[in-house]
Image (cartoon, rainbow, N blue to C red; front, top):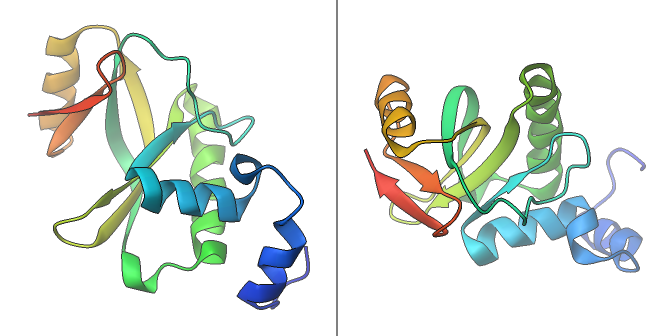
Length: 139
């Protein structure tokens, strides 16, 4: 991919690819669904987690949604994925619609709710994600 191209050229470049397999697709998914958890190896959303709880750790990036371009999102997302690969974790992205802040972070998966909530509190999180119920649990 050429550095410095505009959004229109980027959209044309990725128009022929399935939407989830490129940076525009992931960027759209973030704003359409409010967030996602992805495999750091494939950089694709994980859709088959039917148990466990996602907890954001210490490694993350926070930015106002209005300042986030697809290219900035993709660069930060790939950097976090590299960190997640080292710890066998996932990488997550979500938007706090009340504040307009986008959070990109390494996500650890805990098997039981109590451990996840404890870890969430330890990391100063607002909530943990219940993969089976597909909902946030306040901590």
